[in-house]
Length: 299
View 1 (tube, helix red, strand yellow):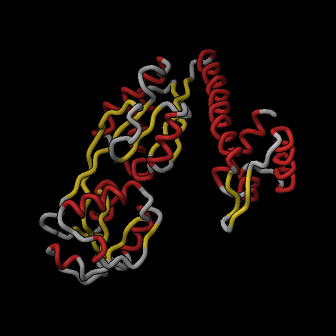
View 2 (cartoon, rainbow, N blue to C red):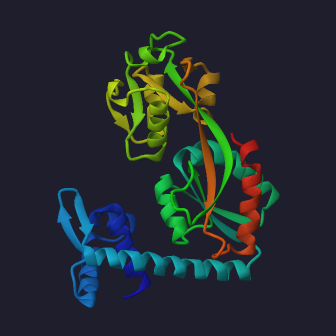
């Protein structure tokens, strides 16, 4: 069993599909299936079972997944550290949640490259929950997530705060000011429930006396960008982070609806592995710089 087989296995777990994994790895489905069969013969057990959505790991598969992630992560980090030690150009791997990745980091990274041209920034976007899991396993130097990390073993630092605004598109007939009770009378566009941003928003709404079950949520969407576009087209109201809508407010595609008592703020945190697993000097230096300037360099 080699590292490539383990990476292949991880990709199947992540996608829940042999065909999707094969496409992403640029190999044929039959070749990937053959590699999987060889791996199962070597281990002596089935690693996946089929369901209506694709494939899911068996109990043995879950064990393999755990160790495969650790092995491949250590393998990749070994070569990255070797490269960093041999070259002046240093690589830093940063993971960020979709909002931060799309609306906050671009300008920050511009400043980083201007001040630290010797660094190569390897960026990846994913949910806050997945970032926590991957940082814990040492698969990146730094993560930026919404809200405090659930894993108490992670080191975290609040890097900025952003407010959520209730907005409507210019095509939507709605007053510039609504009471909490009136909010129930309009369609409200929301993220899917498994996203941390949605969970934090629900928590804030409930805390301010809103009954989630009474809200008129016609459907849920997978991304902030899709909600923003739907709001612009007049399909409903939306609570959106200010950093995601600055341009649309300026161009009058969206406008803020005042709703007394429903003013929300969310904190964003940088996370990294705990002090017992210190980052390399190169990583630590750049992470500290990003944490310092992020608040003042949001696009």
